[in-house]
Length: 204
Image (tube, rainbow, N blue to C red):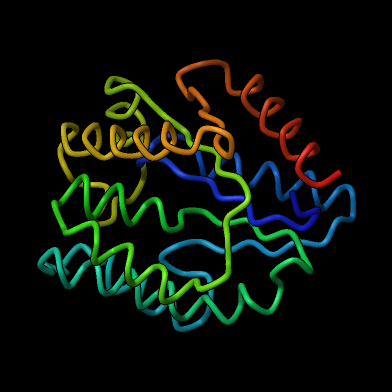
């Protein structure tokens, strides 16, 4: 395992992934360990422009356009990732598994096309470890209701998110060694400690 790994935080809306990546960032800051943090869509200047387009509540793209916009956002981040690959810890809030979970399992886009373009973009870049945050339907609905502003991807019905989450779990099961599933229905402090302890193992 690289001591400067790529660590990805995955999960559906309301699963707590963004909270946990923030906690890990603060831990690394405290320890004065160098890292970069990006999000998808977004991360770099051009990717953030694409993010605003994708998530705009007035946008109404078909599923193929959605896929290509997400991959275009990733394409804009690749040079940033390449620059720091194996030189700094790279924390990513959503990455390739999100594309598969949402666009394939959620929206039915052909998996071969997604895998082919991801392979073309990433080439030799590999994710070292993924934290998959899962949430039950009740907590999902409650957490989305508490959000002050909702983007386009916050407004699907609960059954869509559950279908996407099942897709994430299939991906985790197929590669268990490099995944840790975080049950975000449980005590948040215990989950924070669990994640930080795993990060310590990854970077020691």
